[in-house]
Every structure is written in C-alpha cells, then in structure tokens.
Length: 465
Image 1 (tube, rainbow, N blue to C red):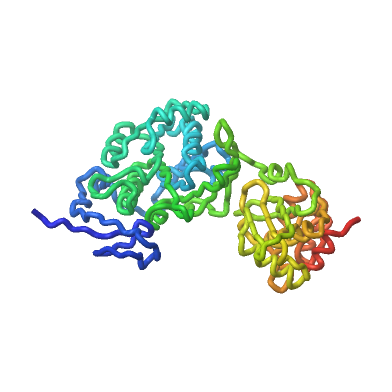
Image 2 (spheres, helix red, strand yellow; image 1 turned 180 degrees about the horizontal axis):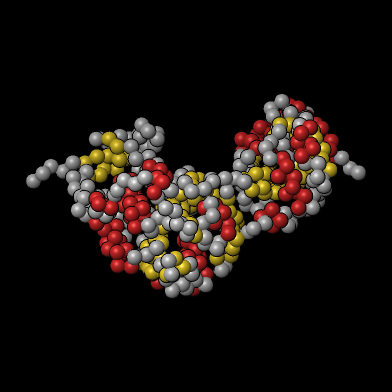
C-alpha cells in the first residue's frame, strides 16, 4: 500500500508547508493551517474535468482571429452593464463577491431574466444556475418574489464538479452561474469543499470550460470577516472580472464596484437599492441621497468622486460636552483616522478646544466616502455644530485639508461643480485653482469661493448674509 502524502495549507492565503505551523509566515495569521492529502491522480488528461481534448488547442495568427459583433451582450440592467464595461463578454469568467445577505444571489437571478430573452445566432440563450448552497425549490421561491420566470433557466444543486461537466454537456448552456464556488468540490482532491485546494482546482476547471466552450460564467464568492475574498489570492488572477457588491445589509443602498476587468475600465461603480421586489437601479444617486437634507447646524454637502461618478453626500456632525476623561470619537461612512486628523488641525490651526467634547460624524445614506475630498466639508460640519451656526444647504464644499491647515486641490473639480449645478446648488467653496481652470469652468452658473486656508473656508461657510 502506497504511503499517503500530506501537506499543511493555510486557509487564509494558501501558503503550503510539510509540517504544522501555529503562525503562517506569509499572512501572519494564527491557527489557519489545515492538513490536506496530496493526490497523485489530480492531473488526468483523459478526464472530462480536465477540459477538451488536446487537438482543441491550436496556434493562430492574431490577424486571422475574427471578432463577432455579438461577442458582448447587455443585461438590460444599466448599472451592471456600466460596471462590466458594456455587458458580459462571451466566454468570460466573472467573480462576484460580497458579504452574506448583501444581495449577490438576488442580482444574478434578476440578471437571468434579461439574458434568457437575448437571441444569439437565431436561438435564445440558455442559463444553467448551479444552486450549490440551496435547493431548486428555494431558488424558485425567490424567483417568484422577484417576478423572474424565464423559460431558458435551468437549475441544479449538484456540487461535484465532475458531475457538473456532464450536466453542462447535456444542456449546452450559453451562460453558467455557480452559487457559490466555496460549495462545489472536485472528487480528485481529498479535502472538504471550500478549502484552498478545492477552490483553486474548481475555478481552474470552470475557467477552461468557459474558454473552450465559450460559456459565459459567473461564480459567486464569499468574503472573510476582514472583507477580503475567501480563498487563494490566485483566484482573483484566474478570473477575467472581479466585482465587489458592497453595502450594509441592514440598509437599502448597495454599491457594485469593479476591482478587475480585462474587458473594460475598473473606474466604474453601480448603485442599487434593495426593496421587497429585489434590487432596483439608482441612476441619479446624488438626488436621492440629498432628499432629506436640512438647513441645520452640523450639516455640510460634499461632492465626492467614486470611480468615474460624482456623488453628492451630506456629512452630519454632532459635538457635545462630555464628563469623561477621554472624549468619544465616532465616524460612520468615512475613515476614522481622517476624523482624528481633521480634529487635530482644528485644535492647532483654528484654536478650537475639543478635548472636552464628544464628536460624532455620519455620512447620510449608508454609502461610504473613500477619497480625501471630504476633509473640508467634515471640518466645517464640526465647526457648524460647535458654534451652532448652519451652513446654507445650497452650498457645496470640496477640498482636502492638510496638516498645516492649508486647503489642497482635488481632481476633477469641473465635473464635481457640474453635478452640483444640476442639483441646484448656488455656491461652492473650493481650493485655489489655476487661471486655466477658472476659464474652463466659467460657464458653470455657481458662485465660486476659492480658499487657501481653513480659516478662510470658515469665514465663507458660516458668513451670514
């Protein structure tokens, strides 16, 4: 009897070693090593799992490869098509990741409705949905709630990748959905589903299947508690497109963000709203985010950039006295360390004593701001709350605050101002800009106040007419 060979694999990063280690030398995590059996029969060129026969691979000249006009097809969900760069590409492999309950399965199920209506080469597209974590009955119940009942949608809860290949050969689908990659397994690997080796091998099989049979494939992936995609890092390198579905499952708004896209830009984001009937597209998110804004102390509006889109956010601040030695600092929707930096600048450069006050800041709507252009709006919202003087709600504030109290320039000022003008803003407080840019934005009907120091911005924002 042959001796069984084993290895220890870190389930966090995929690092391999011949013996157990308490701490992974690669990702510095503790207790993540799991023993796996090394199979000698994983590579079997005659197996259907390993792909098509070798004569399918041939050398071609680039100039001889013909592009089909229908190589990319739209899903009729404009926010999803925007993130994908214009729709799905035939034979592509996409990874959709997100927190539990965020709406990943809902999104792909809604997508099947429009996909099954597409005709390609005089035939309607067929979709095979591998519901590895649910029964077909559960998917049917969700489909009824969403109003999805396409004729070309097929379901299976088969989790063995070997058997899935047989099912795919029977149906010959044009579109494949795997929900989720952590729940399927390869029989040749002696570990449980969801392990590093299983995820890597199953994704490799699906990648070759997508390329050789021209099947557009979406695999749904879980994320860790840190927010990273579960499984080996090579998973993100193997796929053509990585899309993150972000947001708080207890709030309505969701952000679809492209992390990697071989067929388009990664600077696009899509916005959805979770309702009873499923995910609804939000084509004008700034208008919705500012619906409930009030002309009250502690509120400031900022034009922030996320990808190529401009979002207008309301930042609210509340400062109040405390009896505790260490005052509380709470930041929701923006970076906590950035809040501490702005507070330090206000104490040093403005002379505000905040050591005896709790400070709470919040970005209204549940969509986080990920760029530093909100510094100035944050600082002015805090000052407005402390002094109990409101900032007019038709004023937009843009700028990064430096440690010396200076207001630093941010990119795409022109696009931010145009978005503010669309929503009826009359005044803008921005950093000092060049004469060339002043001429460029001369057609924008907004009163522009340029400031170079935070004290100048305070005077302009809190000035009462």
